[in-house]
Length: 549
Image 1 (cartoon, rainbow, N blue to C red):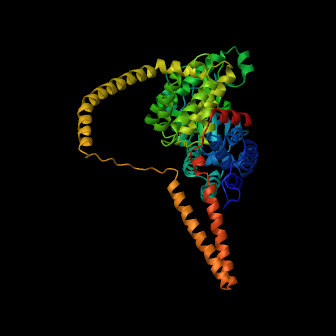
Image 2: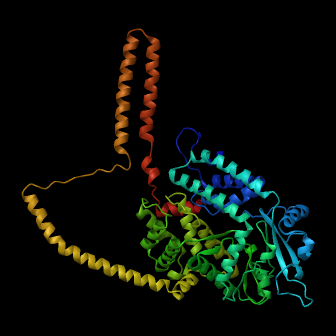
Image 3: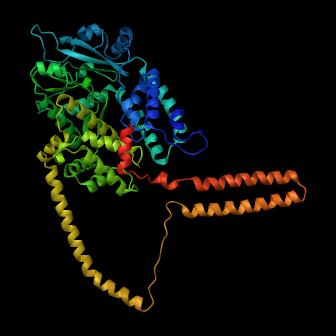
């Protein structure tokens, strides 16, 4: 936290603000990564969330924290067994078999493989010919994790005011939003009843689609701290060699994965928010398996509409529409310099574009946007940062499956199939027609108004009111300098008079006061406020910055 603060103000409590380079940011980020790993489960989760928030941290931090894995040593079986039996009762009474070595471990819980006891459950579908119950995966919350998380959240809450002192208003909004979001997210992830509900809802949305497999929840063996699901085997989605050996069409898998997330985010409004390769697998017949719905989110209809507008604008290479979508969704401040931001978007598209508009990848565009977030007045509403992160992670998985995979082409095809792009064109036509009608009405009213204005001008009865905006506070600075100048003149005159009257002590006080005024007057000329509020992001500076990174 001290390092983060010193990156903005050299002497912490006073002195001019400063900026440090990517190398310093990377060193800071690596130290932060070590600290998060040492501090334990809650802070590992915090690091993962920070890796999705380029409105809070510079790009170098994002790159380093993106490698943070939710991988900690598993709890002892005796401790996990206690949690399991407090929720369900004796293990032997509920399971035919139970492997005590976890098959997957995470910071908040761990997963075991087991086989249900047919007599202890209402599950009617055995997986073995001998009548034994089907195989399941049992997710058990870590013992005493609730108390640890509560204590860590208190630490984060108490630490937040310190950080807010050293950041600007926009960043302060993002930090407060982040702390609130993290507290809510980690508590939701510990609630396995909520996870079961989200899993079932997403499963129902894909019930008629045989391209995907979402494990069913065994409600009789689940509770707030234990979640039992059917066990579905598959090949890890980034194990390209094994997929090739099983003769699975990797390009089709990539397309299906991308379409699944487009459906979840754009159509369904509820999505699996942790699509790293450990949570995705492929069956022998090419179906995609989703695991671990602890991190899942919802998208409200308004944000869904703006995401569609953004995708359509990117496909149409409409810079103004891209900026409008970002402003309307709350990501870009309405006060941002549209000319500068349009240039950033134009460069991003030019850098990412292939032979035609649909040949570039969305992660390159989002990467450019994330880089500019730390410089420009961007801030990410809740869940939208998670959506952006999901898009980039999914695209990375798809490129691993097929190096020539084109996200925009797949997304554009999906928008066309669902009728979103045509609807956007029809809406544009309707709005254009309305604007033409309004223009015609305005023209019919313009001539009489012009004639009345000319008559008033001829009678010397025309007054003009002028309002002066001083966004750069130039008049305030000028007034401040005039006051400092008057004080300096007065103090120098007083010093001379006191010295002449042989009052050395009083003249020293006047001299010290004069020195203070001189320093303040000098600082008033040194403060580059206009540069801090409206940075100029030129093409050359963007190239130079990318080269340094």
